[in-house]
Image (cartoon, rainbow, N blue to C red; front, side, top):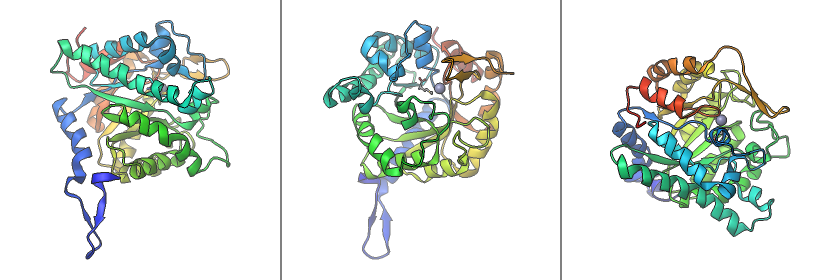
Length: 340
Ligand SMILES: [Zn+2]
């Protein structure tokens, strides 16, 4: 686990290594540079689709790593110009196992993971040529085992009895390592549907000597628990206890639930809170389309931003079906600058 490990002192148990606070400080420094609150990007996969990409595939957005990397780069740039301080890579549904089942070798599969990070790093470089004062982090996305299965379990959190902690650790371990070593600033564990998977992530990070920090983000469909029905408080407590985790939050969840969820998170963690809700529409897995649900318009979404900020969110953006327009509006609500 490297330099942040507590080492036995021989006499009174353990002594924390002096630089154990390095990873949390990185996030605190970044937030200070961003003026206390940072803007995350918006939906990546759904925005690629809005540009005509056909993502009806088990690889979802990761398919574009094969077919249209230039489009991924363009969407990253659109979000940066909209004011985003963090861009999230196209690796959400990119897995070694998923690429292998398409016939790629292990090495080719790992290279595709690296490519997702390289595209985002390149977009940042391009953006910084003209906007070098705007702080930008590249977050490497890691979707859940359920996202890889592409069978809806990412929104039920139900993996069945046969999936154990070890199954999940074995599934994610190499992917996490490859992504972490490809040069992102942070690992984004997104849309985490249950407690078992949060535990698997925490153990991989602690055991694997991962050198960069991470955030854990969960999804909810009732505003109280994560989608599996596991307690959000239990899930967030796992994130809070993991020394590599520097922010905890909620993503791909309807906007109307976010305020209550922020208040819940604050009960169990003092780590910075991130929220990036979806547009409030609902995905119908049978019809394979998004359907309007009651109540929330794009305007409503943005009108919540200051409330979320006051409630304690320090990183705010959007998930599925949010767009560069949404991010521009969030940027404006936080009195920050966009570049288009
Ligand atoms: Zn989403």
